[in-house]
Image (cartoon, rainbow, N blue to C red; front, side, top):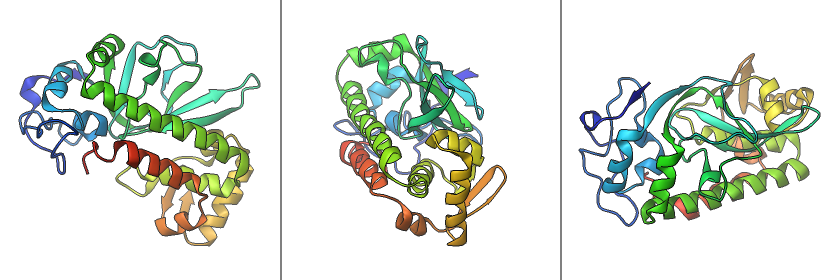
Length: 272
C-alpha cells in the first residue's frame, strides 16, 4: 500500500473537466499516475471535488487492494476508515440470526463506503464485503469527518450522495419484496455493469443468490431465462452480458428509479 504524494499528480483523466460550483480542475491535481491501475479520480466523488478540496485529501488517500470476499466492515464494528472504490464494487448486506443475508445496496466508483460517520454514528448495523475484486482508496475516519465539518463542497457532495444511497436501499427492499427473481437479477446486473468497464462479471450464482436473499435454484432458473433469450451467457464463476438492451427489457422499474435519482442528485457534479 502506498500513500499519494504531490509528486504523483501528473495529468487530467478523460472527461474530468470541471467540479460543481468549483474551479476547473488543474492538470496538476486532476489525476494521479499509477501504472495499469486506476487513480483516485476514477472515483466520481473524488473527481467532483474542486482543486483545493481534493488537494487537502490527496496526501492522505491510501490505495488498497480489495480482493473478492474481503470483509471491510462487520455489523456493529467501529469504522476506522472510509473507502472510495475505483475498480472494486462493495456490497452492503444485512445478515439475519439464522445466517441468511441479503444485499441492501452496492457501492462502486460512483460513491463511498462509510456514510454513517457523518450521519450521526461511528457504527452500522450492516456489513460490507467486496463483491467485485479491484482497488480503491481509503481515508481515515478522522480525516473524513474533519473535511466534512469544514462545510463547503465536500459536505454538499456527501449529503447528496447519501440521499441517492438511501434511495437505492429503499428501492432494493421494495424490489426484493414485490418483483420476480428474474427482474431482481436484471436490476442487480445493470447496476453492476454501470460500475464496470466490461460486460464480463466474475460472480458465482451462489453469491448472487446471497446478494438477492433467494435460493440458488431461483437464480439458476432466472439466469436460464436470460440465457435462452440471448441476454447473457454464463459458466461457473463468470457471467457475460451479451445484450444490455435485453436486460432493460426484462428489468422492473426499480433500476430506472435508482439511476434517475443518482443522475438527479449527482449528474451535475460527476464528471462524464
